[in-house]
Every structure is written in C-alpha cells, then in structure tokens.
Length: 187
Image (tube, rainbow, N blue to C red; front, side):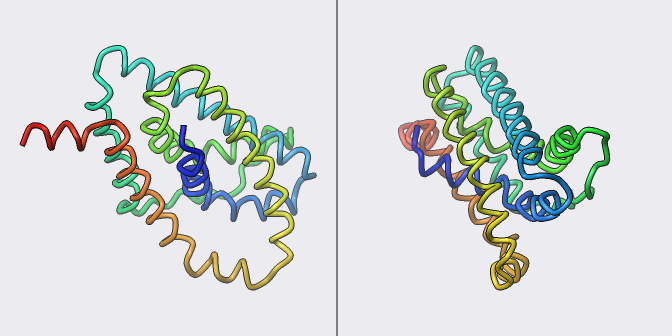
C-alpha cells in the first residue's frame, strides 16, 4: 500500500471535518474527540474494505478501477454536508455521530476504491496507519486552532484543495487497478 496515497486520501476525505474538529475540540475534552473520531474512522474503513472484498469476489480488479470515478465525481459535485453538531448524551457518541453524518459518504466513496484490492495484512496495516493519522490530526488541529492565519487560509482555499485531492485519488485508482493499462491494451 502506498502510504502517500493513504495520507492524501485521509487528508482529502477529512478536510471538511477538520473544521468540525475545531468546534468539537472547544466543546468536548480532547480524549472524547479522539475516541469518537477514531471509532468513526475505523467503522468506515472496515465497511470500505469488506464492501471492496465482496466486489472483488465477483469482478476482476481492473474493472473495479472504474470506482475511481467516485472520488472524481465528488470533486465536481457540490455537497453541503455541514449538518452542524449532533447532540447526544455521550460526548464520544456525539463526535462519532457527527463524524459519520458529515463524512460517511465521502469516506466510503474514496476509501473503497483505494482499498478494493488489498490483502487483509495490508488492510490491517492501513487501519493502523490511518488510525495513527486520525489521532495525530486531532492534536494538530487542536494546536493549529490557535493560529489565526491558518484558519483563514483553510477557509479561503480548503474546498479547492480537497477537490484537487479527490481528482488525484480517482486517477490513482484508475492507474493502480490496471484499468488504464487494460484499456490501452484493447486499443
């Protein structure tokens, strides 16, 4: 598994949620935010992996490269998924529900094509790697929230950056799955 693609994928699917983290970290203790965010990330990664495994049972990997269209579609599809903070009695559950409501569609659409051809061992490594990035992101966002210029830049250019990342991931899926080489061989 290409760790740079995992980092790019993680950043692009969570970029909009990083803004939510600013609010969540002001409202809840950092440990509760970490637990809720990590639980949501793990749930969505497991779902992406097993849906991908189901698909590979019936279809060759190069055909599944067509799933690369999902992140590219998301780059051009304006989606207002800011539902606001979800209220719940448990702080961890509130963060989890907020994360799932804001990021479930994007995470499944982006991680499914990235994980579709991976072995269980690579997936477990990916899960550990993305889990570490999740925890690191919370602490970085907590630190960054104190820097005014960073939040202004993200507010002004975050949407464009996220779209560029989605397109790059989609093109990577086309290439990595063998779809492009298969299509070239047909021509």
